[in-house]
Image (cartoon, rainbow, N blue to C red; front, side, top):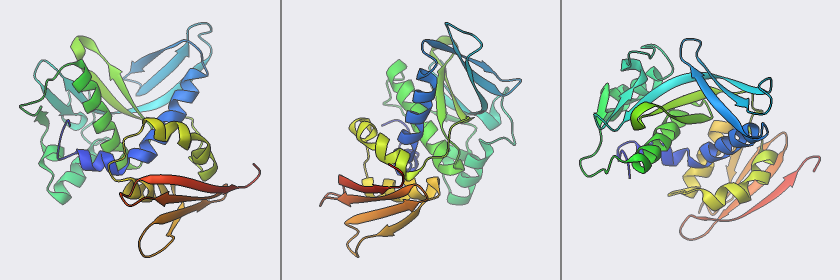
Length: 239
């Protein structure tokens, strides 16, 4: 656990987030061995192939927060010297104001007292913040960038990735589900449909299944007694 008050927001978006991170990884991996460079002045984060610098994946990057081991705190971008007070991160603050979430309205949030604050903990915290940002803004994917002194910067990216379709999700789900932690899979599926812009219909009053539809096809998620995904049945167009 990183920031307890924020974790439920990240959990809600966990499935959508995992699918979008998978798409970003695939696009970056297509470059082969590559590096990343952030230009906060230009507002870009660029992935460049080591073997051929002309091959790049250029994204518009929105700083959300930095997480630093020295002060043992998270600093929101709207309060950051290099951030934009009215930028994308301000949407998180607005949600916090509306719903009374102090961790989203305080400029700087200290690590929990029991947190180790080591590199692994900070990396996990960055993933939590990325998930929260996806949930509250609808933008995706995010990128957790290691910077000086063990600090990580979390960016939301406007990347040249195709919108997530039901068909794409069905192909990626076996891989994604094997590594994704879904504390509430039923809610994650509902939120996946919301964030992806699909139509969702529950299969029965017990919510034992959910069918999602877009122009690429249909998929039905089946849940077991513990609301875990136990199977996905699909009918895809042109596949």
